[in-house]
Image (tube, rainbow, N blue to C red; front, side, top):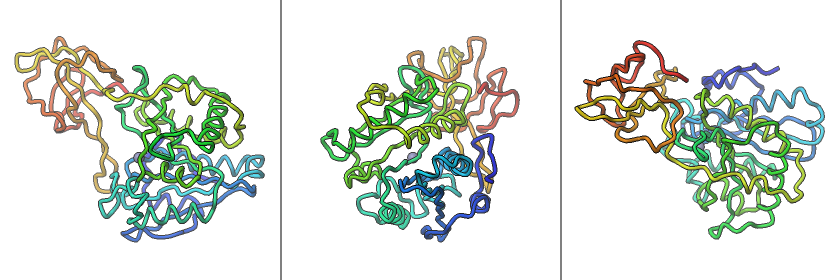
Amino acid sequence: MLQHFSNNEYIPYNELLAFYPWETIGFSSEERAIVSASIGSGKRNICIWAGMHGNESTGIHIILKLLSEFQMKSGLADDFKLHVIPVINPDAYVRYTRRNGMGMDLNRDFRAFQTIESAKLIGWIRSIQPELCFNLHDQRSIFHVNGISAFTSLLVPSSEKSQAITLTRRTLMNRLGNALNQIDYDLAGVGRYSDEYYPTAVGDYLMSQNIPNILIESGVSYGDMFRNKAREFGTEVILKTLIAKDEDCEVYDTLPLNQKGQLEWVITDLLYANMRVDVSLKRVEAMNGHIKASIYIVDDLGDLASRPRLFEMDGKDLVLSEALIVDRPVTADFGSVVFEDGKIIAGQLKE
Ligand SMILES: [Zn+2]
């Protein structure tokens, strides 16, 4: 039985490889194993991959959860066969970066197929000929839907520049809508991603080849900076979409488009260089050796009143003496929490 993770913790790649009897299907540009698994005895093939961007790891946990669901629920496994790749870009995953070992963004390489990893993924999908694919990513904390943090965004991609609703696309929109109807979640905070056509992105390319696929972008929400809610929801979306009908349904169509501009932590009205300003901080994650570390950087300062935010602190009694430089690690004493070079050295931030 698969190890259960209660949180979206970072799993070192060598440990991930040891959790499950994966099959090695190829190697990355730096010769790390790219692995897959297939589970279920059904005739309906489904492909799911994650880790295309190495700093987006929620999808890996969704895949592990689905494998354990399939180990337990024989009903689904009788009808479907799941094919998964937990990390298609392992060189990026070990560095916790977006781009692969050659500095390429895989999700801009699905026309030229110059990277070994994108070529591997498309070959794997074509060999399986799935009825449906799920493409798992994490989205940045800037996204919100009408002021509510977008904890998940969904997309049935366009298959051409005109963004036309082709039959394949309409059928999948219906199926996803029917699945959302069956999910026991408040959909406030679920957004729809822009369907602008990106010919080099995997989802759009697959749609252009008439291979139906859904993009699931896991995001943060209030009290959940580590995307655990998104993990649970994303898993449910997949399980419910598998069994959903494709009769007419507009639930997906009526999801609000996600919007940019959300801030993480905002300290309001503090005195800085003889000005009253709002200061926003955001958390950035990076690898420190083999350990994933978080640092906090200055995201913005000025009048931020119109921007949605996840957390707010009243700063009217604070006077800052250290310089605030946007995009640099924060050094500042905010009273209840003190930072030095981006690290918290006293107190804590509300999460
Ligand atoms: Zn991504």
